Length: 542
Ligand SMILES: [Cu+2]
Image 1 (spheres, rainbow, N blue to C red):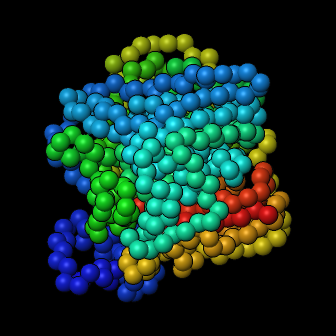
Image 2: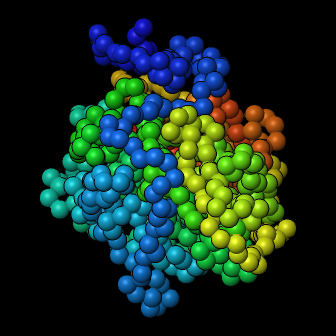
């Protein structure tokens, strides 16, 4: 059967059972039979994307210690501003034991170094690009002026890049499709990004956001954490110090030479964007990494821990649960969402997390006997991808941490009657430049086109509707989830978010207020392959 989105005549294609059951079939139905048929099929599959298989032996689970990303030291703290320098460079790292893997990194490591910051204290990061391709940094979840928000065409060119005009000629249509952006601010070799961080404390993350090439750049290692804290949160008595753990979860696959496998049409990421056809819906790996280590294990006290979970995967969704070796499931007490603390804790038995979402969770290990193990598993995975990581309880310990019944009182209280307009936005597969694309409102991304223009301070309701899984992310603002499938939001939709997971066939309403800064921002799907294949739109605040 020829897939409707495959426009190359006579192209032979081997459909594996996995692809036939997965999104290849669902995508065909999007084009041929419309949304409802697609949703009916896709609902049976927990993933959107196709999985690469590693060509090197994989280590057993729960052997490699959990790494904790190093915290970056500022080069200066004078004048009320913390200044940092990060060099983006190639580095070879041992991810799988005994295997050398070349990466693109921030400062030589994956994840990149963590930046620790305080609410309202500005941070300036000078990023130097020593990689072979243009880059641009976005601080995901940051309340950032437009000039430092990492608009995809605001590129930092590496040394020796042919010429600035070259970057405007690599549109998703391949060579010849001109993606010209007259507003782009292109620099050579380096750029200063300024982050005021006048925002609720939370876990942010920085990653590459280059036009057409975000997915391969993040896959190769361009991602790191950025924490914002304040005195109010510090005073709550939550688990802290070494009992607060960032957990950046990604999936990757490894080629026979030890390098990361990725089905890019252009393995150099220089000219032609996009991925090979079976992976148009998203690239999944068969190795789960936490903080850059495969299925790691972490030794802990029998005490409460604060787990700050980020799904930094390109396309993989997880439904996390924590299970002891005797099959007992530990509560996941959610205290925060993408944009900081909830009003009150929410107890989950398992927690779905889409690409780019964060959950701030407290888990109480005090009931686990010393020597006991707690596995974190992904209910949506199978085989090796079902395991994520494990905790091994090493010792008894005192614990004076607490989870207050009131966590915060500063969440916005927007309601429907505050909204000055309602927008409908569809996130669906379609045609783009003569090939497959992922479209918002029927259109692929075009930097120079106006999509959403809103007034500074306006409250709006957006009704988002999806064909397959689309984690939708708004730059600059946090939002509240108002409804899901015309019903009340789910428990994990609580709090202020910046990314909401639309599941196949689902509609979600969100409400937000566009404030902070004026300028040109973005909203987009955070399935990184979808994002590179058109699923972004301009958000202009005037
Ligand atoms: Cu998407």
